[in-house]
Image (tube, rainbow, N blue to C red; front, side):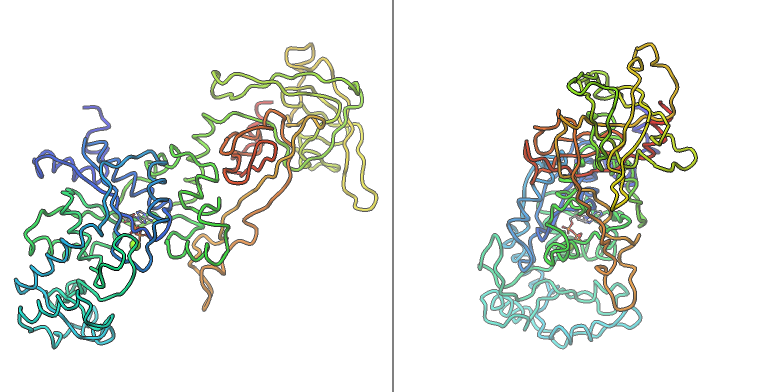
Length: 561
Ligand code: ATP
Ligand code: MG
């Protein structure tokens, strides 16, 4: 065994699984599942659960199912069923079997009758309000329902009539008979079935009673032969109920294991809130690149590898915490740094004229595609008298240690020559600099006689005549508070939205980018990682999203120069 496989390197779930295999529990079998409710799109939190569940199956030669926990018809839709499958596959996982909890409605119903016959369940006529009152509180024991002592025959008759549609929505429930004085509120005669005339996305109008999550989830696990049922910490208090149903029914009993859910700074994670952002038009859709949905991250330019690496980095723990958004951004930077071709793009163009360069001449400058990966080769950049440079690379009155262009100052043009600023032109009415005029040193090309002459800065550029325009969307956090839920009295998380989370500009790109396909990813040198928008970009009409800015980009290039 290599070090990586010894117990100290395993997360706590892997440690449990390893011990179970060693003890030949479940005949040494490992089977997990990812059980989303199809009531929204998947987000980065789900990715953590996907990586954990599918990852365990991979690591221990087991199986992992995708199961839709579709027992609450009011919020579920086929659109979500499809997007979830798409997202899981995009993340790089394939399920062994695809299941729907709704396929088990008949079996669950039979098991409910079994519990009634065994004296473990009863039909209750208390209203929702009354039931709440009877339930008590964590510090006050509950009271038995006056309907708790109905005979098994009466319960069976009433439950069958509930199913047959004889009673109004909400007028009766089926409840497990456990213990109204249990310190765990989940064990105070929890509801198993409710009457609800709602159209289900798969079973249509076949049912007017639907099982509660707790009555459906563990049994669905059991039917599929799940060995380790992994869920988030909020379900720790539900575990005794999970166990109770499996024991009372005498069925295969998976082990529920709880882990900490992922929380990230500057974002909300619950599907309900993400849905609200979409429905109220605060974002352009589930795939808005500012959304931390899988679809949003994907459109933003994240790779599946970077998301898997992020999940690996944050690990799996048993206590809740909030991960800094930088950790996610670092994951995509690291991945794209290795893989993304480099290109030139000027986001805030300022015209630069090389006065001693012939007007009609064009030459090709050779540029390296990826300094991290020699096999990616090189390309050429057209160079001529008129260029665009970044407006921030020129200062009329440079501060100290400003090593870019300023009157009288020299810089190197990336893959080009050393230039010296001789003059600049200002718009008389606005005071804005509209043109910078320079001379170049024709011998300072790479390998040339004066190539090694020291200048402190290097800036990027594109040829004005050859550049192509692109719409570029610069994103910032959707919320400007670390915790968007931290609001002023009487306000909700929407009050913390960042009004400047999207800035749209027109940039000038090197011509090699003119025909890139939607989804194309690259680094714009010194500006960050960008991708051609998968929805709005077309060859010839480019739209780029900024995936992530570069860290310390300027400092790094200065050092190299
Ligand atoms: P939400 O509160 O966002 O609606 P959920 O837990 O209700 O999330 P489900 O569709 O029920 O969403 O979740 C499917 C699986 O993903 C569950 O096993 C759940 O524990 C897991 N999951 C959901 N959110 C997170 C998260 N933030 N971190 C880790 N796992 C998560
Ligand atoms: Mg849920």
